[in-house]
Length: 293
Length: 341
Image 1: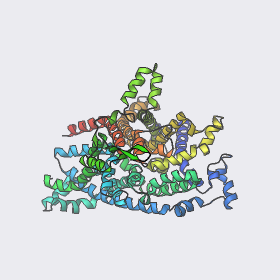
Image 2: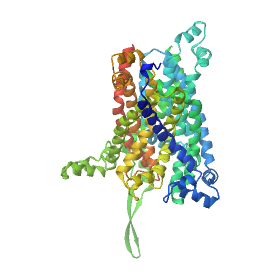
Image 3: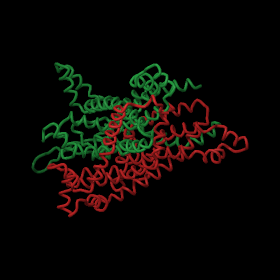
Image 4: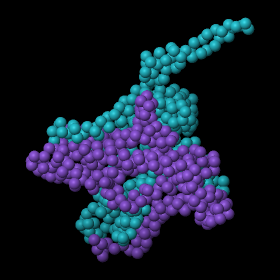
């Protein structure tokens, strides 16, 4: 591709590379810094006297006898029982992704295979629902949840998150199924399959790439949600993100900010792994909507 | 596909959206137009040996009866919309009549919670969006010029600010720009002012919230533009070169027109997403300096009092705002659809 005439002059190449390096530092340095600092004591991570303390860990050494300490992690995971929140988040994510993919695939498939006018209107309604900030719905949920005594439990949050997820899932899977040739299931139907049999035996085997990409974004929505889960879940059922927000309320007074720092690092780690393994799918999912629109 | 088959396929997802999105919207609109019923007060006179006292007590029975008769509450129409916590029409009118200059008028407006939130929400939305598009485009062009093996690594790190939980991402940045954090230290060193603190200054707080917004959304623009750059027609570029176009002219007249549809796409998505800005305000602990519409809803809903009616009213106003931002997208989708059939 790069013909000789396209080769850039050295100065321009250096400038571009420098720009990329600056961006990399902007994108990655905060995470590295916080990871490093999470093994320090508060007076090092938030150092008034000398910022290099955060690197060398002078105060950490005088308090704990070594420049690294796991005090923040022990405090968060053992003392504040952050592991409960981690279990809650895992449960929420697993069930949200499984449910919303199951009902989303059926719906998205139906939308892509039906040529009637109402398909367009259903998609438009889904687009409107997708654009609405979820928190605007919460004051509609709360009175009903209180009346039926279902407020505060994980299944409630799961059902709500599945529903909030649907518009996006439908759009994504709809455009993905559009890409699978209609002739595949048409011919299965000619051979005597019902629509559902055609879906199960012909479409399901080839749909996994699209489903995995959509599932990743469903997972991110469930994992990252703060507004809905913090309003719908009771204190003992909190997921990670509301728990971190609650840490801030209590710990700023107790001087245990490092618990929150450790919890933040713990909550970032799974996402880091996720990007590492599914980078290609995330990128293709982000661009799918763009290229189509 | 037959109507009946479609119906059964679509039923689960349709039901989920009907019950948990459409019905709540109706409920929110209803709640915004009703006020809770006040307790019925009765005055009783208690006469004892030392004279008479009037006591005001709540008539529990009558209150309960009244509440049962009107489960929705007292119909208030648009009253809540115009009260001090929301559109505050009478306060605005008064400020308009009494203040002598535009500056004084806006200063008055800033004391009203709704307008304070609107001011930040709109500033955030319309400053972040163009800047993140520009940054995303610059990164895309720069990364595109890199060696093949480096690209994957750069994309990996670039995705992090966007993928990370918004609250977590804003906390990570906030701890760094805290006056005791590394960036805060550096900034006060640059400004030569050891007491410089972000928490004390509204303009600094707004700036850092906007910086967070750009930081967390530029990767999205970058990834979309990067994908677009891969499809720039090479022969057009070559013929532009043969015609003697400089590198800048190639970008200006070939690349940018080619990815213009993507720019519109990113801009529309980001306008809608930035309009709901909320987590960074919690993460930056910034409510003294900046609030947003979503934050007001969250604040009304939380705490001991749970002012559902007030939250519902702000929710309806927020939905109207989103609808305005969404209308160009809808028009576009409609045109696409008409073009296809």
